[in-house]
Amino acid sequence: MLRECTSIEEINLNNFQTLFVEDISEMFSGCRHLISLGLSSFDTLSVRNMSNMFFDCNSLEYLDMSSFETSSSGIYTNMFKGADIIKYISIYNTKNNDIFENSISSSSNLNEKDNLI
Image (cartoon, rainbow, N blue to C red; front, side):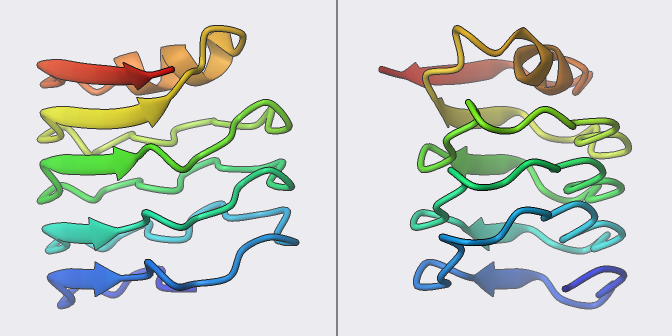
């Protein structure tokens, strides 16, 4: 959708309808100057593939994924690869999804993660 939008710094998708979307892979891949990303209303219950979603988003420091439901998803390959500057991620409870947890943990500069239960 927004893949390789290299000059965009801010995206607000807070009212974006995603209820029936199954594949959001590479959605923001290559958005190298993206600093701010509003995803507060993303309904990811039907999403199966989130691979490369934030690939090379190397200006994104803070990410609110608290609306993400990951129980149906299973593909997270390279979800945060190249997004090494991410310092904080707010996520919904992912205790039953080790694959998603491992994908988030691969962000080398991640200092803080909130698990919202």
